[in-house]
Length: 298
Image 1 (cartoon, rainbow, N blue to C red):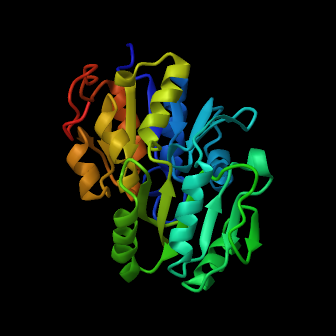
Image 2: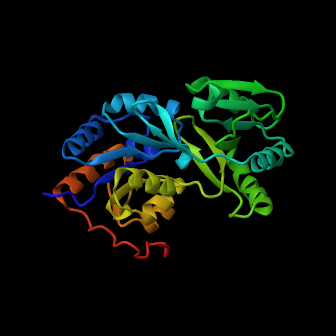
């Protein structure tokens, strides 16, 4: 039987791993079955490669490529080299850094480590600094600590701040007031592997879906034959626009609204649930090319 979809894109936090940040044996075994059946698999995560390495090792599959940093980096996993990078312009990075610094925020500035040899610059500030230090103690990433913003010769791919829950609304409102959507993309999310709330900024056209389209094109796979599974606000575009967009049982409302299918939660092996349905052909047919997605976009 020909599989209805040729590429399966999986978010990591809240999707592939459970609430204990573990890859279940059921999900691991299901993805091995999918791989053996000829389904291409890619992880499509907000994490960087080094922050995803333990999950990739636990998965134990010979994957072609991965999408990291919300789509800002696509990596060849055989060589660990960057295939596609979507980085800030020098001018936009400086403006975003100045915006946060003027409000007392430390900065977590993420780079493509294949260029720089480091992952993060931590730029000092007054707000929540202990949370940044705790983040870096938990993270496998390499960091350079700076007293002030000092860009490297290579542009960053993400600029983020750690905020307390009561600071999220104000932080987002301040960004919206200064940066229109066509100038900057940002997400306010909870990072469960580090137990922090973050507001992450990217160049305006970066998102998981645009990266998926570019990766699928390299594989000769049309977007209509891509199935995507996720749970949080940074998954909305790929769930809305993939040939099959699937929401986890624990997904936020904005993801559930645009999904064509819902599976079990991340603590109930939702990935294995979807794989079993894909291999059995028990899923909706691919959305036609050019058809409106559930959010009304094409």
